[in-house]
Every structure is written in C-alpha cells, then in structure tokens.
Length: 221
Image (tube, rainbow, N blue to C red; front, side, top):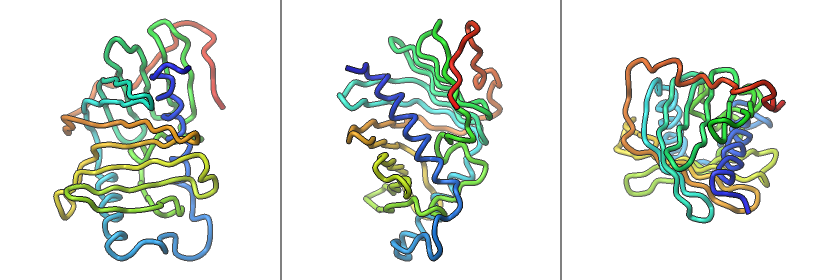
C-alpha cells in the first residue's frame, strides 16, 4: 500500500496533467462555456480575475490523503511560475516549482524528480495568464453559502479525474482560494486546504530552488 505522501504525490501530478488543459486553445468550435448560465459565467470571470491578480503569498496547508491521513506544512507562491510546498515533520516531502521545472524530493537525501512546467503545468496558480473555461475544461461552477466552487477536468481524457477549486466568496471580486480537491482515476480523493493565507512582500529566491544532493537525479520528460 502506498504511504499517504506517495498517494498525494500521484494526486499532485494528476493535478498538473489536468492543468495542462487549462492553457490549451479551445478544442472545438462554438462556445466553450455553453453549459454555463449567465451567473456561472460571471462567477467564472471573477475567478479568473482573482487568480490573475495573485502575485506573492504564503499560507499554511493541510493535506488529507485518501485514507484520512493528515499532513501539514507551509505553502509559498511567487507568480508566475514559482511555488513551494514544504511539509512539516514527520513528513519530509518538498515540492518546488522554479519557473522552469517542478522538483519533487521525498527525503532530505533522496534523488529529485523533475517535471518540465511546459508539459505539466502545476495548476491555474502558476500561469502568467489564467483563462479557465477557454478549453472546455470547466465542468461546473457552483455557489454555496459563502463559497464558490469550480470543477475542472481534461475534456480529452475525463477518465483521468478532476479538480475542484474552492474559494471563500465575500461578494463582488472579493474571493480567496481556500481549497482544492483532486479526484483521481481510481476514484480516490486528496484534499489540500489553505489557512492563514496572506499577501507578502518579496520572497527569498532560495525558496524556489531545489538542488540535487548528488548526480543521477531522475529527469521526467
């Protein structure tokens, strides 16, 4: 059985693969938002505006694995292209996007796996220009009391799974990203919740650099 952090890693990589659809051109003629009503389109516009305004921020995060195991840590974002998930002990997992690649290290002395950002975008958070809905990837936009949820999946391969982004909604353009949930191809769910999210000044560039401990790291193409 996979340990909880390994389950998360696979869900995390799924999120990247689904994310690739978010930046692709529309896959067919016609209205890519044909399934959304006027209110849902307006809410999606608000989400895109909010995500495009994200610059530098940090937050705590809590991950709930498919078996209920909980991990915590710190999250940093420096758009475009840079992100860091730093797990708290006893976990020793570190995920860093440096603007060119995504590096994953499972242990302080472990080899590092790298994934080109160009082929596997992390999520809408890293893109220079977010255009959710342009590629028919938006499945649903749903309002709940104080919340707004956007569900997306790859329109060319819906069997891969899907991601639901959840925003705290205070009205107008006052949104705040609070959670995303990845449902993988096996029907397993991994949740990532953010807390104490705050804008910040310049972040240390070293946060977004992950060096190999020794020659021989695996390179994913």
